[in-house]
Image (cartoon, rainbow, N blue to C red):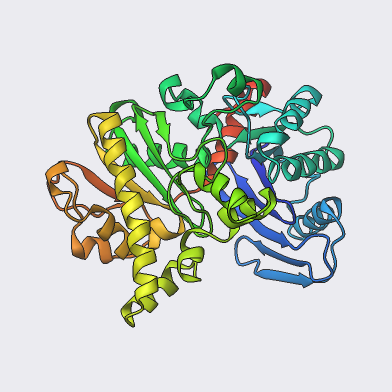
Length: 408
């Protein structure tokens, strides 16, 4: 009997479940899907099979995560790749916050669940939903290895000088206040793929990774290890994002509370959901913002300029942190598709060896590619991220070690 080679990746949000089933022999996708608006009458389920299996959609109420995952299991079974398949090696779960306790992918048991639950105060929007998905999946397949892969794990290599805030360490430690960073699976994958694009081992290169989506983060990766990242205790810190403010003077919060008479919940909503590009110009879609700029919209132009200014500051800062930079890699929805963002972010940085070639930058594609001029001192790359493949790879490697499987 051959070893099982399939991994189901689950990303459970507060009202959604995203999933992919991958064959780890070649990284191919056997199925993908998304369940949205769980708990509402208007729930939506979209499932796509491999090899021309087509896409099936369902609209109607899905009561909870248990019902959602049972629906996922049924759709997978229709494609002949159900949860009861002997070819399924493990289920890999995305968990947003692992604190300092989890520095690598971890096989889930009751002790792991307890620790993830203890971290809810520092990830109240994410870890509860992640836990719900894990518990539901374990109930459906209690015999199957299930692995937690943490967004924060890649950033646990940051030195204390980068991870600590300048506040009383006793208070910080008591309340677990420090810089954790997020998007770790993306930064790990993209930094490694950038090294591969350069024909080098990750231990040989220093890379600035710019994960630019609706959520956005930057990281400084030195010889395969993260030494700094822009997000902090929460995903609010750092770059200007779709709806998040990113960096701001902490006293803004006091001012809004004292002078603006806003509650903490109102300020939380303002900074996380009504700021960033959306707060500045009413749009958080970069395509729409660029269209408005082309039509002469000054509000959209200012929002874009603020976005780029913050991005350039982080590029310069991480250049200083690394000392030597071999590559800058753009990834995620905006980073992979918005040529204007890439050009503006590096414009005028020729003295640092950073530039984009206009023709190369304009080319669109799904494969990793260089967009810097021939012979540039620092490579500039577009590297499509694949967080699901990264989670599956880490999950399969861990299960392979414990079960004697051959690692891909």
